[in-house]
Length: 199
Length: 74
Image 1 (tube, rainbow over the protein chains, first blue to last red):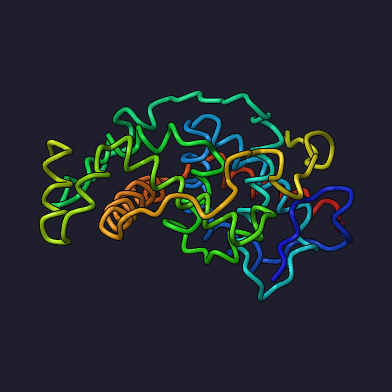
Image 2 (image 1 turned 180 degrees about the vertical axis):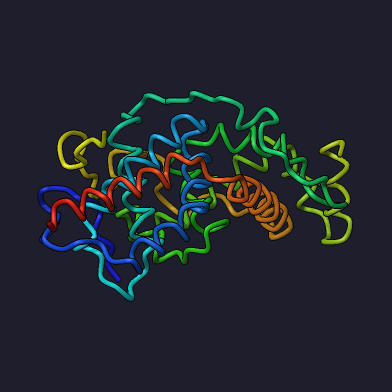
């Protein structure tokens, strides 16, 4: 599976030579909630995420010819969205954080189960990760992509994906103060994690 | 009015090589307990957003795109 990155000029046969069919449209709609969750998490802002999602839908629609039915549409869409994000909003050395409530209570999350990390603390720590670490974590940890798929979406080696994952987890555990607790045995460690978080 | 998606901002990154300088090597190992706690929190966070109602603008956008396709076909 090789997702075409985008509706760009270099992307092969594109645009309006035939209409996206109903199946394509239905698949787009089906993927939108997960795509939006990824966009919000990546951009840190509903406003920016929805602009990103709109741009992604436009590009996906106009380059529907470059999507091969039967291949992974989710990966194809994530690739477009991610490329758009980095093209529009991020340049080397410049962070864009235009938070509009993502990490301050706009999202209603269920009460923590016993042993779970505090979700508000977690979201704040997630927002501070470098985007290229955050997106790999989201792709593999929440969106169900394999290392190989994440590597293809990002255009990097599988080893780089694993490295970013490790670094992202290490930064989160450090930010959340759970590094030392994790060194304990499994049963006690889990309790220690909870205690450290003052849940 | 729908913007032509082909016009600006179509620069494509084929790789992330210029985004990071510190991803060499495997990175620090994290305990499976921490990995598991992070995974659960991540999924909870992600699910909370994915379950929000989609803004109407996206379905409106798709309807406009479909209408434009129909006009182009006739």
